[in-house]
Length: 397
Image 1 (cartoon, rainbow, N blue to C red):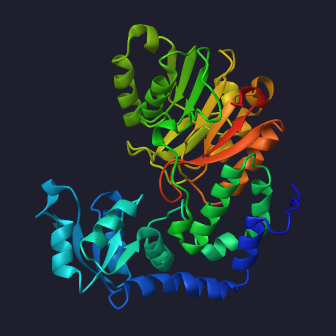
Image 2: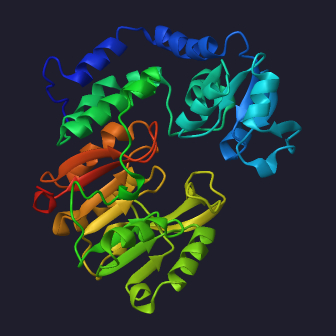
Image 3: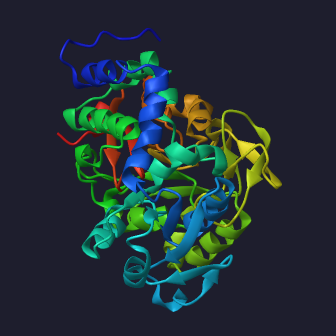
């Protein structure tokens, strides 16, 4: 696909022009320097806000980078007084009182505005969001495909406008540009307020749900998005296909289904497959969480199916949701025939890899040039960002 023409004065063109005024070395120095500036003069001494999975994954990186972790703090009062790998865990108030003047506070929590505000109100002078820490110390951190270094984003700058040019409304275009700005400049103030989380995958502003909806849920997890659909639809639908390959998640999904009325559960079919561009087997990381995913080094081997094959012979889908931890770009081509024949609404997550911001709209438009393409976000920063491909006849007018 050739790069589209973008009018002079377009916000994306202006942003890219500003960003490309820097050399790659200057971009690296700027991104490294943001951590140094926010943490100064105590960038080597840290208190970690958040003792969950992210916070605990940060601790080894801190030590490997030669930094000192003085404490964890967390809002879960039941954990206060414990230790995490030898590091004491305390309340945020105690941590600020004890270490506020001798350390910087690393907020190891996604959706970080509330803890950052809490620390400011407690009088903490040095607060670093996790993405800023990632920019500085990414070599020591676990792989984080959902974030990217700004100089690497700008290496792909010529490819970015192709996705932007396909968006159908100003809200989508504004979200696209501010996502890029946040990812390259860490400008939190530019981000629009997220849309309500309960509308994720099924936004009433874009389309209405039909009582005859046939829903395909790729990445069904424990049934949370199935329940979201039932809440939004009033329980009216024709059929639901749920794809979830993680054994623990599949058990939780079955337990949820067992609690539904028989007339509802009878219209739901579950499939222990990953979805992709080819039929076969793939390696899979199954940890019983929403982050279970196809991965080269995955501990188990599972079946993978294209939607074209997996849905053959059943009710034709009218709405396909994909939240499959980065495999969306394989699953869309694997549904090419289904999309061509039936033109379902597509709701596709776009935050699992940075480049999906501009790649996914191109894949959706290639699947059916008649789709209208929209971008919405349902959480802070870059998280819970979803593209919608909607046939014009199903749009809310």
